[in-house]
Image 1 (cartoon, rainbow, N blue to C red):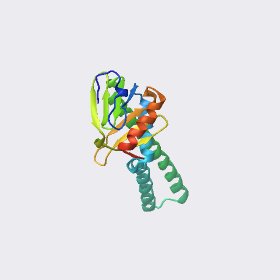
Image 2 (spheres, one colour):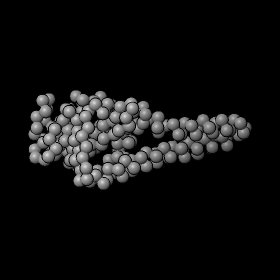
Image 3 (spheres, rainbow, N blue to C red):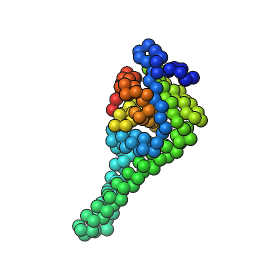
Amino acid sequence: MDTRGGESSQQDTGRGAAVEFVYQPMVADFEEAVRGRARRTSAGRLQVLAGPLVVVAAMLVFSVLQDFALPVLIISLVLSLAAASWGAVRGLRTMARRMFSVMEPYGQCRLVTDDRGMVSTGERGSFTVDWTVFREYLETPGLFVVLGGDRASGMAVLPKRGAQNPADVDRLREILDRNLKRL
């Protein structure tokens, strides 16, 4: 995979041409990616639901030990569930903002993808990743989100707006389908 510039989107990699995306990372990209992961993966759902479930269980145990009246129990459960749910959503936003803060100094990204992996070049650095690092991907209305395996918590966010032409989105989807499991 050539990263020195030129017409990298026209290179032949044996199974298909490389696809090039150029984009500036945005906080909204990471928020959409984290929300998509929370909806589509068991680890993401567990991360979001664990806090509210623990709070409800703790409230039930505490109320039984303290012999709360039924109206007090119901009001306590509703309020604590609302607070825990708000905290879970807030936690996702915080995670997305932290991920963005890591990528923000990277600047404008140029991502070249083919059947071997991805090469990302930014204003202040670059990295190359083989598909073996990732296990699955999901697609949201504005992104492709590539997720690491069981032992890796890596996540790559690929905004569709970075496509050089509309056909590149379909070509990237084909590359991802050949190399990763779609969620």
